Image: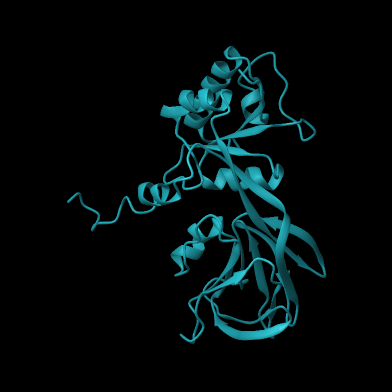
Length: 282
């Protein structure tokens, strides 16, 4: 048995069923020789332990929840391999579920896993510090239902002006989220790229694009009387006024996942296509 330092995380205190699964897993891992730490919510449920802190050295992070919980975890602990245990609905980023957690623990103990490494996005502006996004950066109007005009440049060259509800700039893993729902392409592992997807553009000539991850993207607010809102992984961070610009590049941080198989196509079929009404057994 290879002992690993593991942190079991739950970022939402309202998910009681996820807490129960995590605590049960904590007891199992303790009995198998793992050094297990708990987050602030879970540590209150188990007597005689200290909660995890930012300075602890971690080999793995077990995240009990959905994809949103995983993104919140990345915001706090970057680059550490995450094992997602799906306690939500689709859980596209997760690798297992509570019913298979014992099998997952056994495979980790035997080093029967691989680490999937994924690039992330760095977004910055003159008035704000740089933030890493695992999923996507969205630029939209600060008022729901009102259009905004945006200028988009790639490597300091003018690409287009977008008049619509906004723009999604996603990473590879973010291509399976809002970007996909808005008409973007699903990028497979090994495709290191940005996905640029306009949100309800006035002109249908503004189409989704895939741009290499070594490019620099600049988005400028051209609306004189409307501020732009910049949303990073579902959280509002920036407000950009007229002629203000955000810069988007590949980040140094990565979001890494524990995988027991590299069969991405199977994951797509099981989690994204399972509700397809045309997908019947022949």
